[in-house]
Image (cartoon, helix red, strand yellow):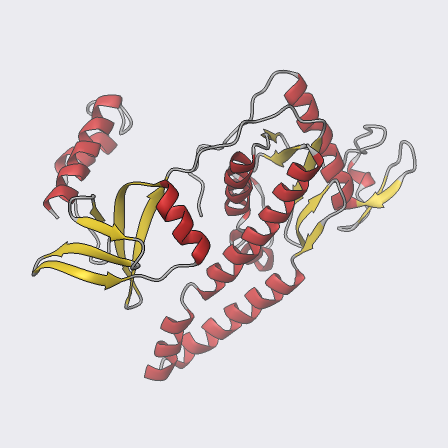
Length: 320
C-alpha cells in the first residue's frame, strides 16, 4: 500500500511538471494540488516481483499480505494465456477483487511484428444495425446484440421498479453481463477483420469517430443504442491485433462516406435511399449502403497511406 501511495504521488507531481493538469493557478491545478489522493475500496493493488512471484509449472503464486507471505496460491488461466505469461510477462502485476472473485492482472510485453507495405486497404464501416461491414464483403450484423441489449434494459427497469431483496440480488448478478457480451463479440469481429487483412496482404482503414456522441443529435429512443455502442473498444481491439500481426492501420475522416459513391465519387445526401440501400444519382449504381461506405473508406485509407501517413494508433490505450 505504501508503494501504491508513493507511485500515485509520483505520477501527480510528474503531471504537474508536464502541465497536464493546467497552468499554475488554474482551478483544475489548484484542486489537484490541494486534495489528497484517495483510493476506491476495491481499487487494484500493484505488486512487483519482490512482493509477488510466479511458479508457472505449478500454476501458483507466492504473495505478500498484511498477515505475511502466502505461498502456493493457485491461479487459473487458459493454456494460451499461460504460454504468453511465461514468454512475455514483464513488470508489475495487479490484484483486483471483483464480485467476490480475485483476479491477477499481469502485464505482458508482446513484440510487434514488422509492418509491411500493404497491397491495398480493407475499409471498415462501423454502425449500429451492422456492427462492422468490410469492403471485402464481411458483414457483422448487430441484430442479435441489439435485441439482447433491449431485453437487458427492460429487465433492469423491471427489477429496479420492483425493488425487493431478490430483485436487487439479481441486479447485482446482472452487472457487467451486457458489457462482457459486447466485448466478446468485438473480440471475434476484430479477429476476423485482422485475419482477413493479414491473409490478403492488406492494411485496414478505420473511421476516426472521436467525439461522435457529442456531435450526433438523435431522438431519445435512439440515444440508448448510440451510447451503448462500443465502437471505440472495437477499434482498439482491431489496432492491437493488427500491430501483433504486422498489419498497418490508418484512421480516416468518415465525413460524407455514407453519401459518397464508391464508383464515381459523387456525393449527394439523396444517394442514401434507406439504411440499407444506396443508389448513386451520378452513375446509377445500386449497392448495399454499408458496403459502399466501407469501399469509400478503403479508398481514403489507400490515399492517406500513399500521402505518407504512417500506421496510426489512437490515443486511447488498447484493451485486451
